[in-house]
Image 1: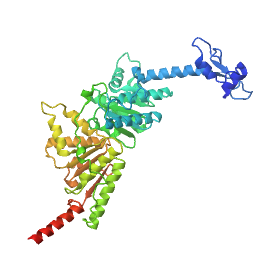
Image 2 (image 1 turned 135 degrees about the horizontal axis):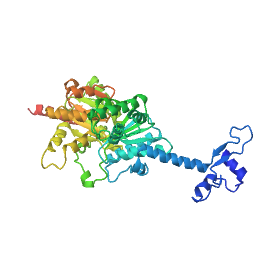
Image 3 (image 1 turned 30 degrees about the vertical axis):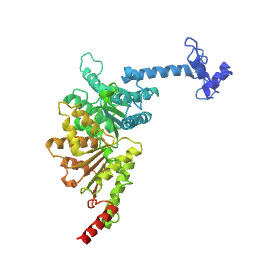
Length: 469
């Protein structure tokens, strides 16, 4: 029992009520508080010399009212408006009718948002198309912080720029610098729909000033956008992709406001053709390879298994046709499915480009953007046989856009190629050579010639053929 409850017990003699707060909550709205009798303040029953002696302190009913008023004021300042209904409790982290991969993706976005709301540190960047839930999660973070009595400023970027422009009006009672400072210094700033604004030089400059200040001051910030990071002002992008400050997460869930038919997409992955290619079925070729070759292959398997356990960054496997790189890449993807993780996408690069070209057909049931988005945003992407595609300028550009996005968004990617790294298109090669995000390993073994049993059968067949002749 704290001092307030002790004073209530001593002065009001409510011995039968050992829970004054409960009495406050259960009373009717027109009844006076049973603790302070409607006065709103109390004088604590403490001895002379105590710091609180003869000092009036707010009653719990007053504290509750002040907290409610503060919460209302914070909501007004936060610009949440009707978004106050967007809480974590109102969010459906398991979605409706989603595939296992999309469900996994949505649940992880939800968990990231909850963790950030509990302890806002750094920046949280939520990417994704319209209606995927990113605004709901951003608003839920603001509502959570406000419910705890903390400040949070939620603003849609086009509205923010309008507010700044409004300061130029002769009737404005707030100057541009004052309003800009209030936004830059907000304890928690949530910018919704970055990239949806009219991109004038003035608008870009103001956004950069806001984000650069918060970047330098390490102020907690949440940003949602449906724009590709590489399409933004390079100054802003450089702040957003700082791995020491930002968590970037792409939400893949389709617009929940659309019907199931409209949400549907083309299945591009051909992993089902590689269902038997896992680590257990991979041959170490112990009796076939020289000592150095066996060690090289053992290291390749180890790298693949490590990546499969916790996919992060890029893994690039190079080597001659038949050396086992496709088997290892498929094994990584199959391990994800076996572990119940996000469903990976496995696709051969020439097939991918064919899928993209097919969207130009008048009879196509989908668009280039939808197919491209499906691939570039896959939770785990395996691109097999990079370098075997027709190297047209269009193909090079699409592959660069795809891989550059995954590089900037820190999305796990596995690439196999029979080309050496120095033959890869320069822009892609620069990403692959970033040792902080990419591991490149050359499988230096000859083409697989079949199982040991098959080889023995071939040797016996050749001997028999010699005897016959």
